[in-house]
Length: 124
Image (tube, rainbow, N blue to C red; front, top):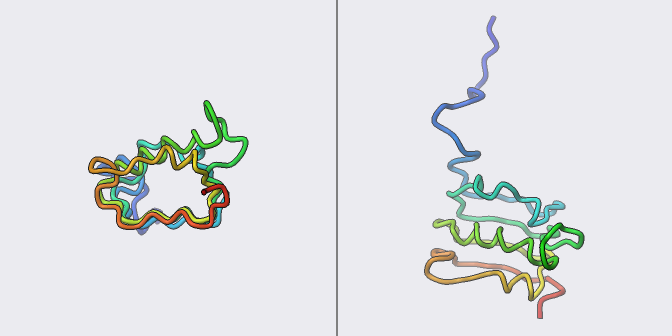
């Protein structure tokens, strides 16, 4: 008998990972901003992203100028997600320098309703 999968292993119509994913909960891991690659494959349909309790700006990340520079591509990608409404980054080693890479406006984060960056010790 031929092996059958509930879902076929590949679909010719899908060329990006998780093409309809709306909620991504990855809190309490060891994810740094630099480790989230490739950004062009980031799910474009996200409405909520939970990155709480992750070392997003961890020391030792290979970034060009500072520990916080590695988060800039992540912020730029998230800003381009047209349906993103909620981003949670509590206790995620964010600093004032890291948030300096965050741009809010009409073109970036057009539907953003909540940005939670509480409990980051290096934020003033």
